[in-house]
Amino acid sequence: MTPIISVREARCKVTSGMRAWEGFELTGTAPAGILLMHGFSGSPDEVRELGARLHARGYSVRAPALPGHNGDVRELDRVSADEYLNAALGEFDRVESASERAYAVGFSMGGALALHIAQRRRPDAVVTINAPVRMPSHVYGGVHLVARHQASVHLPVNPNAYLGTIGYPTVPAHAVRTFLDVVERVRDGLGDVHAPLLVLHSARDLTVPFSNAALIDESVASSHRDVVVLEEGQHLMTVGRWLDVIEPYIVEFLARMDRGHARDSRNGA
Image (cartoon, rainbow, N blue to C red; front, side, top):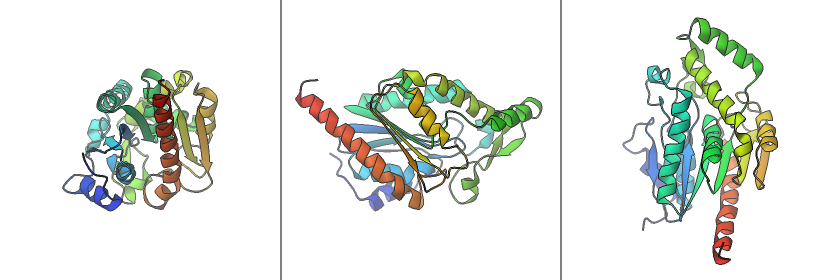
């Protein structure tokens, strides 16, 4: 069995000799596996430290690069909404087939994809971090207008890519329109989400309005859901000091899911 290693060791293991755009996989000692997904225009670099911390607690973690997120922004322009949605399902199936129970955890669009997984599969729990299910109306209007007339024009979408986090600072307007299509389709299926759910969102998120947290809460059918709106932070909550803020919520929630599964097993459920 692979021993639990320290956070520092896990991070070195994840990043050593690996391009930041590439996904990663860490095998843990716990019976639970986690599919961990980054956001639109980002990369697995956004969730590397979170993955390392969860692995240090024994979880197996699979964090793939989403379609088109391989370092060549031209590839992003050729990805359809179906490709995003189907890729998330396929990645979850891999985690589920290798684990006694499977969790889906996602940041930003990765969180929306985690909700899509819960609509089509039966994850044992879902965690979303600043996940969009509805963007402001002016975003839809502006993006669709530009994409209709100049689809190849690049729009600034990821300021964190200018600040050292690996990702695309700008992407073609058509690619943003595809992102909005994913968001709309996930929103339309929220009533089919029944999995235990933790929704984390920063009230200071300037990219995805924190009203999305309330919309998710109102729309899903999950009988067990925790919604936490944080008074601190920003959009990219999965790195640096903001990860220190959200990590305890994620760890405590997943630990409760683990304990509930163990209790159900003892009771023969």
